Image 1: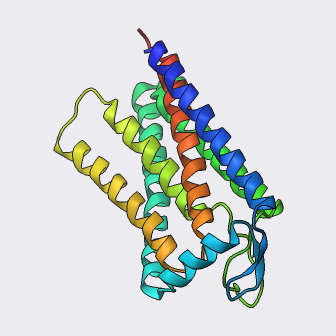
Image 2: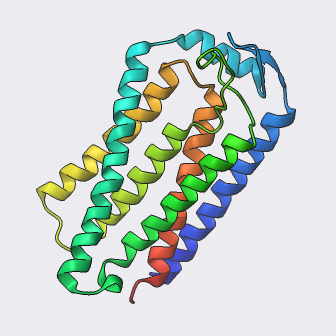
Length: 218
């Protein structure tokens, strides 16, 4: 298990390096005004072409918002699971360690969201309420990828796998994919926003898997 944990840790580091490289490139490579908002964006040529080709879809945006709420509900469900375990097992530290690691991953996710709201890399291609709004990385893509990834890994680790577990894993995967796809199709994000959100979400997922593997009993 520990060997596997180190492999997951290496993957997390590689993904983090890729995210940092993308972020730096967005600050310096092909930076110019694009989109309806006229905001400056890195990789402007490809971002503009993809945005124009996709267009905007109110329906896709609505679906992405609903999926986002589903992911928040999933976070609540895992939280309730941990609380039930604490009560039944009569001890705060007796709940599954994986749930505490997941909570740490969610804290990192929230910290990343706040950081990029303050340190704005790119703004949306369209105005939000008449004003420019930070768009990188996509918080929906980041949330969906991280929550679904950690959730599926946790459910896979359960000893008693059944139809319900498989259904939940399928739902998490489906909602995650739908969130990312619809966020792009909605037209309020650049392609680089979506890629950045998925990358950062995957960093958290593999960091979660690494820690869980390293603390697991042999």
